[in-house]
Image (cartoon, rainbow, N blue to C red; front, side):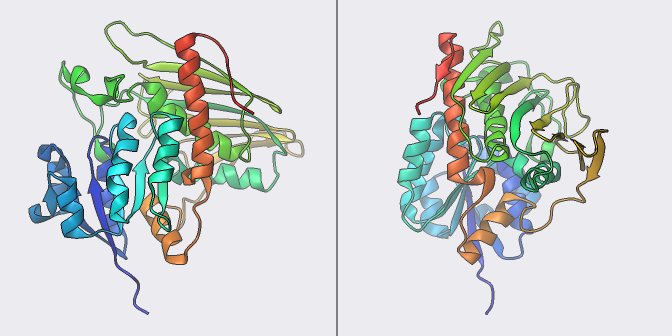
Length: 357
């Protein structure tokens, strides 16, 4: 049988990752971009020009886009605090939905998003770090039992700043007043380095720890003068089996996809029989084991289909009627969101937050 052609629409360009997702769609052999929509049409110009999207396929009203193009899959990239709102708007059109990270602005919102999905349709939360070959290899090493039971995860994630790059990590030079206009620096919109990056650490960290939840969470954020959101956070989580630490930073010395800063962005994982490090955008992981204590590198050889990018993976699962697995699954993403919620509350109240049993 001839493969199904998947009709894909991109709605809401708040997050510049929409350009990446549309490019993955354009490159997929079984997918077509049938429409894009944003309330600010100028934000679609880059995608229109770079990807050759017809202006007839571009809409300022999401309803018109969905009604006229009838997509199977909708890609959503709204501001973090508006994920629930946009899933609720789009879900009644009986589509599969991919939401760009984070899951939501709160656990309550995340659960509402899950309830909004039409039965038989899929909701996927895209964590771009899941498609990193090194992070995938780290999970493979853990699953093989090479470092024993995971006891601790250390995560450091961030970049020079969210306004200094756009789609495909293209460098940008923001104007002096751009912070005041960007949702990334708006508390109400879900801005701040904690909400931007902590979910990477807590969600992939949950994946590495076999879906286990912490007992309590303690967080501290900086309070930059003149800003209403943080640019640096440090979060400690106590589990029954040990402690883990998650740190986020806007203001790293270099962007990790160009030159890894110090400290490096990525994960260090300790187990009962070894340790493992995986830093983003490096095509290797470094391993220590009881049998071979001297640190040694394992090359990843790159990701392979169907886990090279989120669009490829979602379509793979839909074509085979398979459930999503790993960080993009709702079960793992929800635990990651639960830790983020506790961290936000801890930073606000300046005390440790115990998670419900």
